[in-house]
Amino acid sequence: MRELLRVATAGSVDDGKSTLIGRLLFDTKSLFSDQLAAVERTSRERGDGYVDLALLTDGLRAEREQGITIDVAYRYFATPKRSFILADTPGHVQYTRNMVTGASTADLALLLVDARKGVLQQTRRHAFLASLLRVPHLVLCVNKMDLVDFDQAVFEEIKDDFRGFAAKLEIVDVATIPICALGGDNLVSRSPSTPWYEGTSLLHHLEELHIASDRNLIDVRFPVQWVVRPRIGELHDYRGYAGQVAGGVLKPGDEVIVLPSGLTSRIAAIDTFDGPVDEAFPPMSVTIRLEDDLDISRGDMIARLANQPAVGQDIDLMVCWMADAPLRTRARLAIKHTTRSVRSVIKNIAYRVDVDTLHRDEAVVELRLNDIGRVTVRTTTPLCFDPYRRNRTTGSVILIDEATGATVGAGMIL
Image (cartoon, rainbow, N blue to C red; front, top):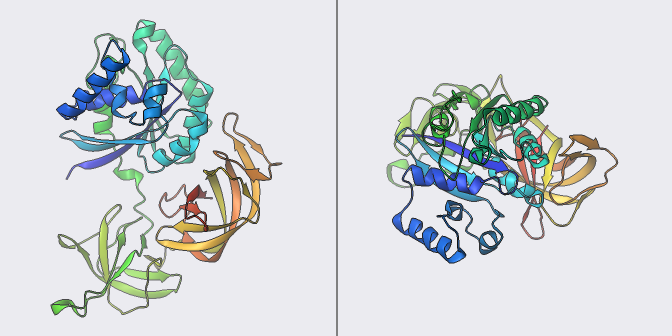
């Protein structure tokens, strides 16, 4: 089975994100003939002098009319080495919430820069968001190099400028590649137009990037999603706990604790659709059987006895607010954390982050649409959690409006 890499594109307006994805799909032969024919027809109708591959991801009518990306578009493609899910995220400031949605599960962020404009305020904004969301890898693609005659000096200046800013953020791995998305330079293969560039093509970088060590294989975390009780035939005594491994490595014989009850047992077996396995690790979906019959239900967390998550009701979050109505102190919201849903109240709003300057505005009394800030929530029942920087699954929550059921915020536990 091929390893999956989740990629989110980001950058300023009209830097070529949609064109880059379209070109990758075209050059890797991941398009159906009718898809390409539809793009060619639309390009002719708009009077374009070329086939606009950005139309492959800009599917909304408003996007095509304005030539911008509004919503997150997901595209899947595969090579013999790896499978990919590409999230084309908007570049506009007012769609910050869409960018957060697309990057929240990404293994890598592709940050595009127009070679003519260099590093802009929006470039820094998206780099900060990628850092905040703990995206492990970042690739700075200096696009439209053909419009600056593939000048190495321009590329090096942009590279140095961005690395100076990235040094202030928690970004560990940064690669920089000169490309021309429209012409396909340095996307699938090395371009003869950049003989001074000694790195690999973008696709080669995506295929060879090591991501296995990005997952937390130390802290065992298994949120229970479903209790499996078939009660039929030979399985009438079967009791298993199904879910997706959120951290660590689980093996039969391991001593575990169930939270928040504190009951302990040992793993008797680990079952999958294809049969029993000797170990389970992220992001495997498995069913765990224990040696003892315990009172376990959806929302409980299975962990190691000597390595447990924090358990508490007062939780500090970095929140990206996604609703039109502002977030204020004493607001009542539902919280979804792993497989557990609880009610909560906002105790305090500590500050709002100015994403452009990284300044903390501590005088703020509310968070508005697309704002990012630190808040403290009080939940009705305890949650079992880790800091987001340690585990992106057990360290994240979504905030839900109880009246409408709409998702109004995304939170990272501090």
